[in-house]
Length: 630
Ligand code: GP9
Ligand code: MN
Image (cartoon, rainbow, N blue to C red; front, side, top):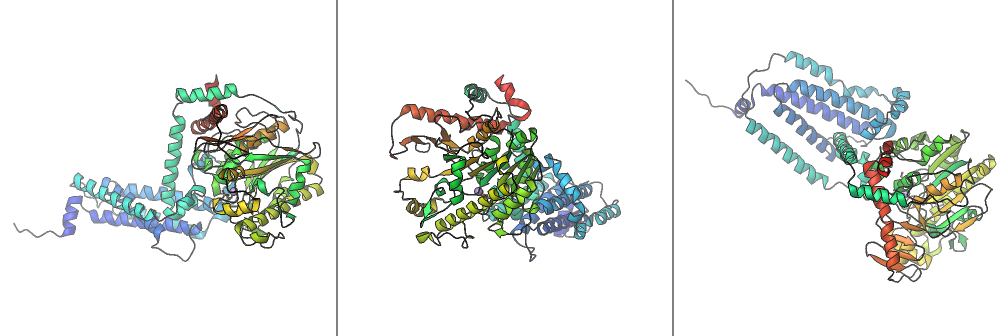
């Protein structure tokens, strides 16, 4: 018998099983169509800006991901692969199409936590036609063609195939290894810190399929930990803490029960700007005066951690500590919390949150829904009539937020400002001469604080003009530091500090005003506290209990304390540095020995553990915590 030499293709075909060519063509077709759809999604969601390029990092990753995915299917399931590929393509198309609709509204592909809250469907369904584009046929145009191909090829399959499992597995493993390594090599250049505050950057950098994979993994991980039972030690920590927690109330408890409530979280405002005078002028003249007819707290340390601004929002709403690493908003977006939004809603208020930036930033859209707010207004809801820095100016933001709030008879509005965001470049028009600090970041920061001061003043004026000022509690506080270590020398120069690091730590405070209308006289309170105490203080004035707040009302007389997320504890007279495990006297900045105070500091650290357990195990859900406290 004559023997012809086999070509490479024939050999491969013989090994893989015929007619492999059809399979490969079909697989490549699927890859191309999914690839095209993911690329289209990048552009239609503006994750990527034109000019259109095919071979950039993103498309390489997307292509790679699809290749691994599809090839695995082809090689593992040679018999029914066409059907499987087809179904995969349909599912992917529906997913990407939903991403497109949701993303056009909220700027980010869908996430599991969002799917968890069906409320968003309402928002989108109302504007579904404006969100649709003719070009969206790209998501589905290939499907009938592929269906037709499957039909044509239905009898072309060879029933019996020779399989070489070893070779197939070898190919799959090699493809996966090559892909993973090249992916990792490319991913090295990506600045992943951008992913911490804005998840859509993951989709930007690695593509939407990777984004979904990451999202599913993240969600599953959190659910698994959450469903693991508490161990005895964790139960003990929780029980001990809540047993000891005193239900103390201040002399002001319930003194301001029924007014509207506006809480303003000011971007980057540090306490030292209050009463600061530069070149003979006050930096924050309005807020300085506001102390005369409000409660003013001058010893509040910020406690934000990996979630920065969003951690401050979290503390205001829940009086729990932020997560030890990362942002609570991304780690536990669907946990149950007893939030200020829910509490006020239960009392007949309309609870709304406002922030003039993208709704996906810090995962706010998801989080505020979960917090039980009636609505979260983001940049897409504002008229961008006046821009400053990242987006709408604080002045216009206040004005529009107030208009929306005043449509309701009883309201709680949480206003998160933005204009005074680092690095404070957009305030050269502000009338505040900063002398030797002109054109430095410190000088610009002071100008930004002056701008915020005038913006807040205009909010007060507007309320007064509308006859609502006396009927409104207004809480104002800073979210976190504004000037970081890179500015230390200049800040020390500004404040006349002598370079001690303890002095630097001591200025890591945020101001807090609580204006209660005209009923109560102003008072400056020097009690040490943290942002975790703001919620209990507001509730104290309004006469409301919060059984799971870890903070305490700052209006309760007596010494206070504050623990930072790194375990550092600040008392009225002492500073316990947890990294150094050393106690300092707060006036002299010198290390001191005082075992009783150190013990108190270590005891305070248990609060962080309690908070972590509540978060990890979602203890406020279905009153799980009550089971433990029984
Ligand atoms: C953005 C704003 C800033 O929405 O809240 O966040 P930050 O960078 O300060 O954490
Ligand atoms: Mn901030």
